[in-house]
Image: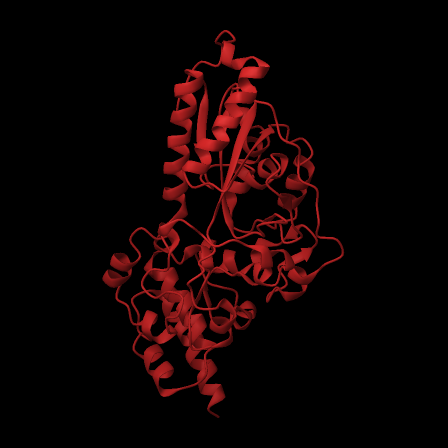
Length: 368
């Protein structure tokens, strides 16, 4: 909780309409100084999102993300997270790594490991949360004690809905936030506050009749416009799923070992995307061009050391190895690939052994 207060204070001069408008102008300026590219203010009415969320959950599209169902009420009522909150201060920060090897080239070379562009650098949770905390402190210094809390993909908050309501973009057919001037290669964060700040106008939608993101999805996870079946999504399968990846989906995963960007790479609006200016999101450890064989050869100690400070570390060495085994099963059959898999055929992890066995059977079939 940053700048926490009771939320029952008397109105101060800076909380009158003219004072609040000036405060918003200051918030935008402070956010820019802290590295955020856009800031907007939204009310916390999520009533229109409720039926869509509940229907999505009823259809089981959340897979093993049990917390989505457990915390549905919290998602739809932010005041349960921050009592007295009436506004979201939503921000975004670009992460497109301009110096990374071309994403299409990596996807096109089945011997390489594709890592989602957002995870090539440091963990965005820590970067954004720290900047948001500083922004909340600046607001508290100007407005006095008030109820607020910072979030960035770290609690049951409907970030895309709030960011859309704050004018940061519209929800695309792939369910991600889109902006006409910046595409979708950015992180979102927000401060829920009890300050009655003037709100921004929501952004209008501009997907039109385009269905490129739906058509390109390797596993058919975007089952309809604005409707994602997480159980088929490669990001879910390689990051959130703790157990075995369904065998019928493994071939379609290709060389994507952590996340998937296909729906963003094909989006016409991303031709306007701006590169990251935050050094923390620069590529680390050559993850934009590493071979599957090289990464599969890492020990658990190497993984922990090299992935320290990375979002990838949270899936752990076992799931990382599982994903790489799938990638190697989809790679061209070479002595190096087969040898790398054979070296871990007796891996201590049953999960890894299963996926290595599948991969070796693929190469055995290819050699007959």
